[in-house]
Amino acid sequence: MQKIILTFIFAGMLSVPLAAQSSAPKTPVSSSEAVLAAWNEIGRKLIAMAEDFPEDKYDFRPTPAQRTFAEQLLHMAGSNDLFISPAKGQKPVDDESRAHFATKAAVVAYVKKSFADGAAVLKAKGDRGMSDKVVNPESGQTMQLVDLAYEAVEHCGEHYGQLVVYYRVAGLVPPESRPKK
Image (cartoon, rainbow, N blue to C red; front, side, top):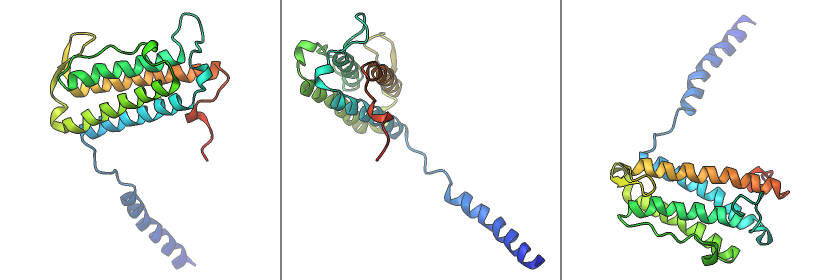
């Protein structure tokens, strides 16, 4: 009986290093891959909201002082241009007016384009480009592109959180909060 118990203990001791090896950390991603992954993830969530929220509620605002759901999306997508344009060496275009994007389809297309354009810039710049110096159009501060990219991701995350509240106040459940099938 002792031999059997010792055999199980010994086998268990051997399996720990094997288990540790199988759960070893994956190869680290590069700085451009990391920011691209964060960009794409927040983009996925915001695009899902833009597509999901009912069109008849696009002009919903929780209080009179706040932007409408559509205005939140347009502001966020327009702000993405404040990252994309300097990364491309261009001047940002301020074109986030609801008058320019009167339908849900137009808003969704603009949101999708802003994330696709940002992803394309990040891919094109790669790791070398992440250290490029750019001027933040809002602050006038010179910074590395990677820092401006993370500011854009953070800004999108802030608006994602606000839009979750819009969903809840409107009596809806955000896509990310729904049970997975």
